[in-house]
Image (cartoon, rainbow, N blue to C red; front, side, top):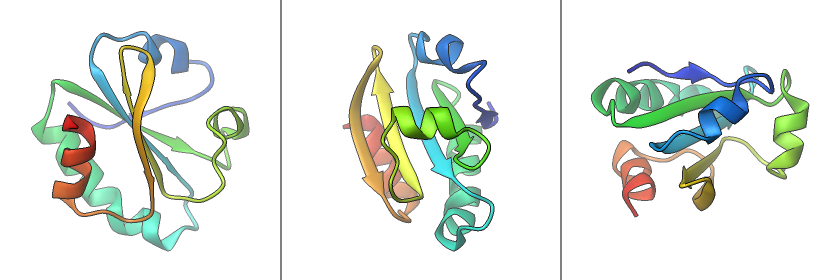
Length: 102
């Protein structure tokens, strides 16, 4: 499964999924965001059992505000509608997978 571009309009549909969700809050101008982007894509391609979504904080300020995003990249894991893990900054593939599976 590929990465889903998450917007205010499709967020509730994604949030209500029974799959584990990883949200990547990013901006096009953010260097660390660009560094982890290929890793996020790879995780999405290799793990169809997860929903992997990207949220551009510049385009979706309402979502960024609802998650109280103050630094990016912000990775948020949601299971059963609840945030179970989150982390700011660039991470390795294994660190991201550990966040999801924790």
